Image (tube, rainbow, N blue to C red; front, side, top):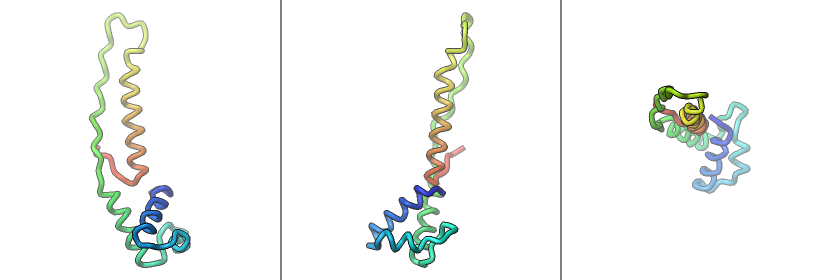
Length: 102
């Protein structure tokens, strides 16, 4: 869980439950839960719904074969970029409270 995710929840909760943001923030306990039972239940289901989402990324590419006349490893640049992008996407998805399918 990230602070951004909890801030997103509070904004959404306030908009739909017609509560003032300051009142919801004041109900937040030091452990990240809420003292108000209604808000606590909504927070539980918000987190649960995120945890149930599983994102399937495209498969990681296979490493390319070395060309016969390669003088350096520049032919690997696209491969390393693709692997790095896949890792970055996984981190952002997990930071949002979702899971990445293995």
